[in-house]
Length: 533
Image 1 (cartoon, rainbow, N blue to C red):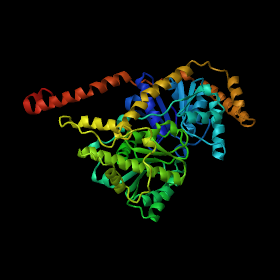
Image 2 (cartoon, one colour):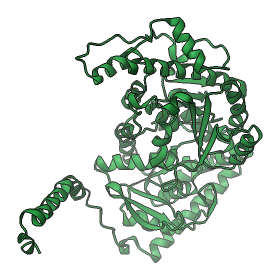
Image 3 (spheres, rainbow, N blue to C red):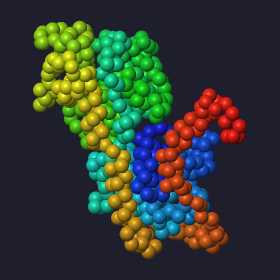
Image 4 (cartoon, one colour):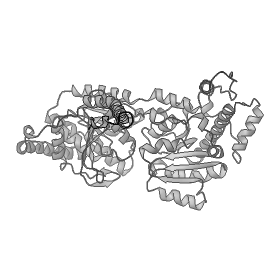
């Protein structure tokens, strides 16, 4: 696995590479990650499960992308590939310089290659044209391409002029156990009753729709006096958000918490009622899956591959427009208030049967809100009862909870979590990736002249340049093999995965035994401590 984007950096590509690698290791494969150094984190590191990571020192240019050098990284990549006995080089993300260079050098060495694209790019702007031409060069001689959504697949096929038969759509996933909703009995604290909390977790950049968010927040806060925002993330657009907060005096209702660690995501999500995503382009938005798994109502712009991520009843769509986002948020606030009212009625065991009273409760919570129809996306084709049936006193709380969850099946937090859990699994993603690897490993190795023919078709001028790059890279490979033969490069020992699994399995028993012996020697057998020394 090769990418500029890996831990300790946080993002969708980073989590994809890490979790997919862990599941491939569990399936019996050897996985090595190569990325650039992050500060003092350089050299070779081992992560959980025996995942080996090479943090290669490299200068950076922008957004954690390393400086393009074409040939300067060949020596280190060749050494790693030979030492680790690599058979397949899997690059991630079109913006990763390491990814493109690793695939180029791997093809010169005769290794199989796979590329995963995590982004959508346009065709008109200068950066998109340049990136598309570079992507066409890299993918002209790659074994297989993986995209994270069908929309991303169509985009990549057009950008790189690929045969769709050699492109697969394999989505991202999450670990549902890390994103469980809070129990219903903790759902209605005094603070949660007071506020409808909207959570935004994103990089604060233009592509994530921060300009839309900046103009929408004051309007939403003016329309709904009981709404507040929690915004997590860093980026150049944070200055605009801070200026907006100062201008409209919203310091107590717009909370900027800065950079968020992966381990802190759930603790922030469960503070909210609604998750808002305002991206202008997105191949696969993993953050809305995490939010839905935590039981939040999701509002998102309908762009890119987002409509493929969750079913329609689990999120409300909006156009990437200020007015449409405000309207979608207002509708979802109505649903959030309705859900709180239902949960409160259930927990108090005094369900209200008067629909007029229910409407008054909603209006009390949504004071200063515009009049909205309750026939929103979340309620389409679903008959939801707001009055749970009264259960016999002998039935415990869990039975009541299950009954309640089944009655409001499409808006209860636990129902959202269960549906996400059934849809996304990293083990399934690893299995599908393994099928791609099996196809690639059986492909015949083309001669150099065939590779040059593929590069030559990349353009009248660019094709000739790409052929020159490929030829120079091939000559460097011959030079390195002459000066530093692969037979003299020491093979690195493999991590003892099976022994590691056994140690992890027996470690709790070992620790308990040590604790028990220590307890006995100190309290039960005063003289026995001398025999254990």
